[in-house]
Image 1 (cartoon, one colour):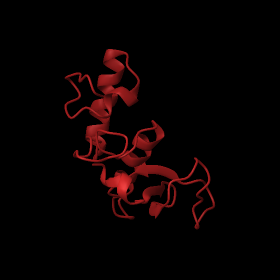
Image 2: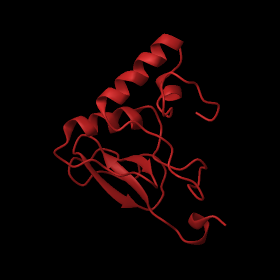
Image 3: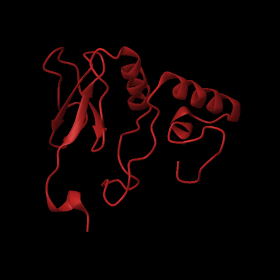
Length: 124
């Protein structure tokens, strides 16, 4: 049974410019706003583990992942019964996936979930 169906778990919402995240109930895009700057918060999913606030490079990778419309969730949309999908954590991992996307002529959102950027996966 889905653990997220039994209880209303909150989602992580992030403000990349302020480098903060909050746990809030699910809402339509743009409804939650950052209390620091007032910009809309980006939904980061159930399994988001934010970098430290002073880690500017880590937040730049998070900005690229969230900018492509991806979230930090498990294999199923609800996030249950599975480990979180791969998302790049470092700039070198992001760079490798950008090169693979350019080389293969794919959008970046198709290569970001790959654990190995050189091997295509069916579920990415």
